[in-house]
Image 1: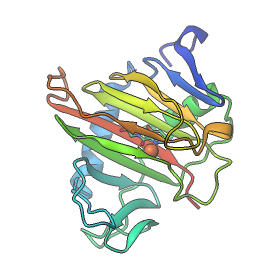
Image 2: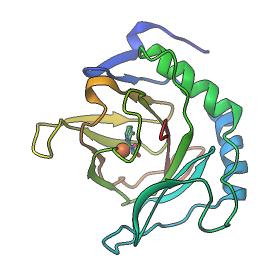
Image 3: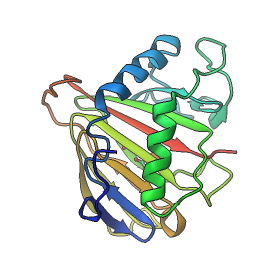
Image 4: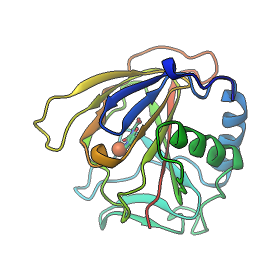
Length: 210
Ligand code: MD6
Ligand code: FE
């Protein structure tokens, strides 16, 4: 690890932390691994149960993948596009996710699902809770790469006050425990260009879903 000092571990809420720049130094290796995943299970625009196409393109790796369609939100072991198993979770994904979780006070994180989100300029993710998993004792670990985003982190209800966080290339958010079910969302990505990822933001989110 390039560094692991406390100044870069910023508390957001109870049991929730922003690990500023945690992935710097591993960006290239992560993107190489990401390309291999996407070759096997490409990004696609999923449809919400209400029939709206999402503005964020998604894919998954690991044993379980998160999907949405007319039937609802769920985790499943096969990719509905390729009809095959999702690609294996790259070792570098797993290692960095576990290291980040440990830094945030979750030493036994064992993710079985990894959702990959690709935001183009203007894409956003409305306020939501992550509640399709069965085990809320495990945290969520979220990597940010490419263009920056404003991440709204709220409370237990939609109406609770929100903190606006800037997530930049290399940042990791870890949250669990008392904040595990807090509402959150990503505001519309502003126009810009990242030296490596161009006009995209990539978010890689690890969970224990079973
Ligand atoms: C994103 N992330 O950052 C979307 N959920 O693009 C999430 O929805 C998220 O970052 C739970 C925990 C961390 C996250
Ligand atoms: Fe989420």
